[in-house]
Image (cartoon, rainbow, N blue to C red; front, side, top):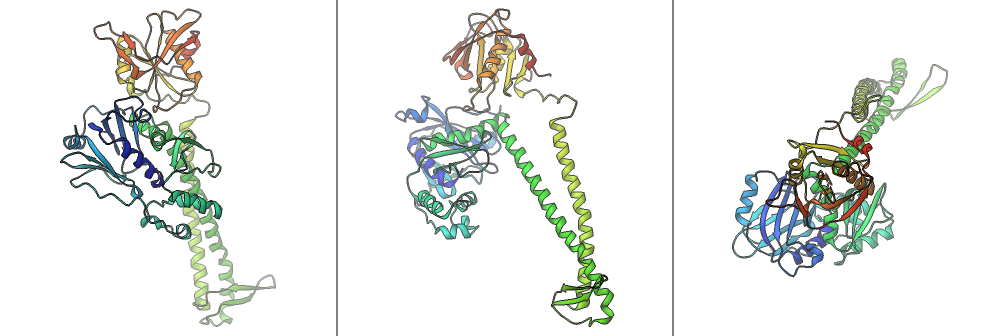
Amino acid sequence: MEAVFFRFLARELAQALPGARVEKIFLPSPNVISLALYMPPGVAPAVTGGKKTLYLHARYGTGRFFLFLSPQKTNQPERAPAAAMRLRKHLRGRRLAGVVADWPRRVLTLVPAGEGPSLVLDPRSFPTLADAPPVPADERPAWPPLEAVLSEPDIWQEHPQLSPALRRRLAALPEAEARECYARLQDETAEGFFLETRNGAPESVWPVSWLGRAKGQTETRAFPTALAAAAAFGEPLAFGEVSGREAAPQAAAQAAGKRRQIRALAKLDADEARMRAFIARRADADLIAALLHTLDKQAKIPALSVPTPEGGNRDLSLDPSLSVLGNMQKLYHFAAKGERGLAAIAKRRGDLQDAKKYLQGRQHVAGTKTPAPPAPAIVTGIAANVYRTSDGFLVLRGKNAKAGEQLLRKASPFDLWLHVAGGPGAHVVLRRDHPGREVPRQSLLEAAGLAALASFAGKAGAADVMLAKVADVRRIKGAATGRVTVANLLETLRVAPDPQLEMLRESS
């Protein structure tokens, strides 16, 4: 998340958060903090989504920085760590009086009312408690001339809002467009809020549109508010990482590894060409050695013309700071260095190619079936079958009523629940990486078909299957195991129970 975007996000948070009460503080995974905030009345429904409790999720330390509000909380550890309990001790039950932002450094301070410390959210370090409220930073920091921005790689140290990523974007534009865009970034109003994704994974979020200027398979989506754009950017990162379903982060890591390998091989090619050039100069050293008895060995000259065995002459460029003898020795030294270098390069290239083959072999072994991945943690100790839809979504189906209840308890609120309508059947959960992830229609129909197969309508020609979010499904107190009520039904899917869907089951 760029500072030039964080500027507008912090401004919207400063309008939405005053009056909110801190309910709990979670540390769901390394480098992630979540605050449960009971929102005050009067906050715009567009911010709260009709929920009384929102969660402020933030990343600190290593990894891609995010900060966003969401009606969903991430999966939490069974026991809160000591650091989370310490933060709760000082902040739980306190209302927020305001928000102070140092936006060029992307630092946000939550200032509670009354006496007590403030909470400082800094992307560079673990959240800290500050006894004195911070002095509001200048909303209009200095912006150096564009020429200085483009020519000084370390300008971000003095002007942190000018990140290396922003510099690269500006440098890639024609001069007129770069000046226009740079002037727009300095404005107090945003052009809009734009999320860039690559292969479905969030890449960056900006207050200006780079549409048509981004390279590769980048897609751009526009949002009406910075809060909405920040949530769309952060949810795949936060929820996928915390829940252990890191499809997008893992894909990004694999792509980054592949890029590193390509760069390493390209560097080896350049090094090999340099080593071969060193070796080629041995022939020049041999020519000098053959005529050394006729030359002034101690002469320091920039060039030397020597006869070749073929009968012609060869002009040799020499280092004028060295004698003729010194140049000959230097050429022999570099030739030997080139031979040693080629041996090292060959070994390094073999290591890189072996690593590439190893990774490819893990993904696919010719003529053999790819080993099934281990069962997801959610089904540990639960009598459930695991399926994978044709679009790659994980589907879990309880084998009995107790297993169905256990799946609902362990599923994320934004996962999808399916159950046949009008009679008994199995509870089915379709897992999503994050609340905003869309599920293709084909996957919904396959999951609904699996629910229909394990129901009273399993041998019927067609069946109606209810679809809802897990958050809207509640167990009926005092009722038999597996009986639930649904607060909000998304839709009812009409499917034909097809036994071939059982082929989607993953081996355990």
